[in-house]
Image 1 (cartoon, rainbow, N blue to C red):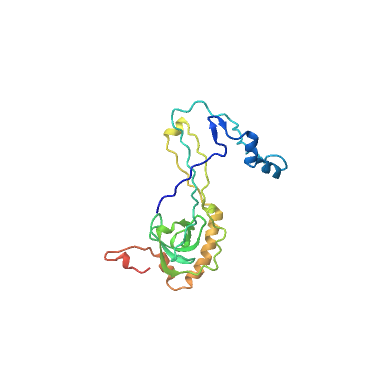
Image 2 (cartoon, one colour; image 1 turned 90 degrees about the horizontal axis):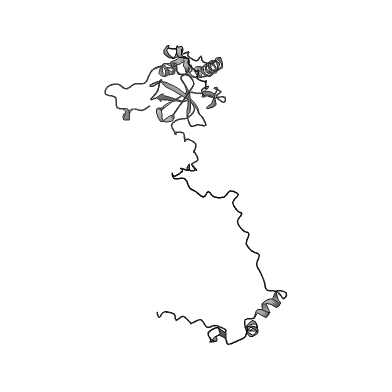
Length: 233
């Protein structure tokens, strides 16, 4: 296919000699049809409103720049997604804790908190595990379930377990070298009453099932010859 031949541009007013056109200014006015454009717009040429200018900066830019690069904090656009609960963990499921102070203890799952942590309890009267938060990565879900329909856990959230911040005391010269006895913070009476109220309802459901109380009180452990991947919880 042959390439298209471009037609050379021809001026409407060719030059007779350099700087002098063939037609006069008035002749070109009619030749270009400017009279028709003017008549169409009420005897004046159409004009467009000028674009608004960008607002001038209130502060003048500095004349000198710092010698060292100033680090600017990066904008974090990440939005945390709510933690997805494992399908094997449902309210009332008996869990086995794998790490921490109560490693190997069996606990009852009550609900998932807004932070994604699990609210569990022993109950405390059965195996000594109080109301506490546990990450679901450190528990094993079992097939055993407890009826918790009568347990009210609406008041428990992440703020309930927040620690109270205490101001540090300034030590004097004499107290600096002396060993101070650390006073253990006593548990508020309100939290003790909450634990008793939850345990009372749970123990009723646990005692209704034979051998369940003994099962929760026993600590989980592996013995020689046991294969964890073959166990059915």
